[in-house]
Image (cartoon, rainbow, N blue to C red; front, side, top):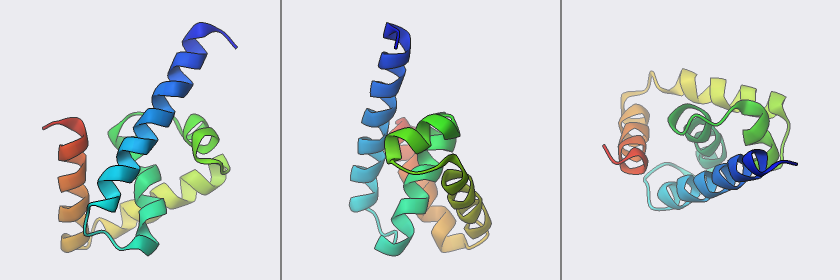
Amino acid sequence: MNDAAATTRATARLGLKAVRLALTASAIEPRDRRAAELYLLVTGLGVNQVLAAEVAGCTKQNVSKLVASVEDRRDDGAFDRQLAAIERAILGE
């Protein structure tokens, strides 16, 4: 593994930790947090699904399904507001 790949992987792991911390302090239900963490990692932090799967310890297919499930849930206004607040907090907006 080259230095750039190692740095990218380490950055993705750090991003996942930040997302998990933010979700712990959020109103998002614990049962929804796994899907939300992968969604935020992929869409909010721009980590590709293959790397997200690697750092989260699951398959790319699992990441894809969970990201899609969160996208579907964003039609729920309360859930969307909660997720948007976490996105703003993580991205500093």
